[in-house]
Image (cartoon, rainbow, N blue to C red; front, side, top):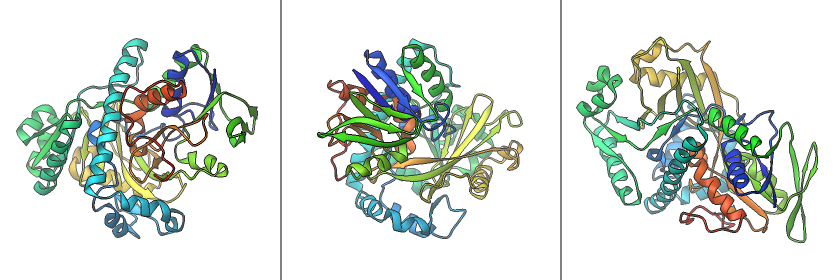
Length: 420
């Protein structure tokens, strides 16, 4: 069996790995010159079941509308994006009910937990090095109402496998001493012991090398032009480097996946949502956090990856613009400094590594995995802000679908029905 995987980010490469291990001939196509060169390049680096909640939560549409015109808002909706996203926006709003939010969160949690289990196996089997840390993660709160609300949400997800502990600041500072200087500004924290951290790009690049050693062929610097369909099946992938044929095709192109499907008459509701990260050397602030810290109110994180701090945050709906806006990156860093003054010792806008990536968001906040209306065409896309967190689990179940095998987890809420 021969399979073409379109996309060489963490989703495409893990898909290739699981297919190759099953004895499939795999070819991976990507327009970039190396693996992990787009959204997997410099993401936040946290594998967090703690962030399994979809963005389609009660109150989210109003929060977005209030952000219009506020360039420094953590969640920004550009007016220019509205005409192109109205259909997606209406579906997103329809998912922002408590019932749908919790259903979506349980599906994401199921997939994220599966990924963490598979990732640990991969790490042990292959000896992969990617600045991995297994200290858990922590969300911090300066507002008692927000702390109580998130504790309640986490409690509602406990039956689905949410592993957490709501703690006071004495216990929080014992777990993360970097909180000691600011403990009087906080009311509590939620600790997630199962969460991990690691450099997604390093992992993806290392796994791509393993795949190449097992016979996977990578076709870099090659742009997909179209999928050819005859008699109801995909017969070839047309690229600017030639035409390729295979028995099956897996689409793992993130936000660009719908563009390939549209000429086939398939409308896939995935919209690009830009996020940014700021990365700085950690040497100037050695007493900074050792585990990932997330501020749910200011919408930022801080994560130590080896000898660097990486700060992810910001939500910007602006179409396919993937440029890192220095103003939004600086606003993110200033939010970090407002909570952790010591970060100022590391941060200089002129020398910091500023990065932006397009998160492929679905209205429900759940990815689309497995079959499409075309029998030999499969999806592994729409992971939003959780691509790294859901990578191995998503790719394992998609590989199972391609091979005609039953996935190991319940796929409810994780497939494309044609009207998601």
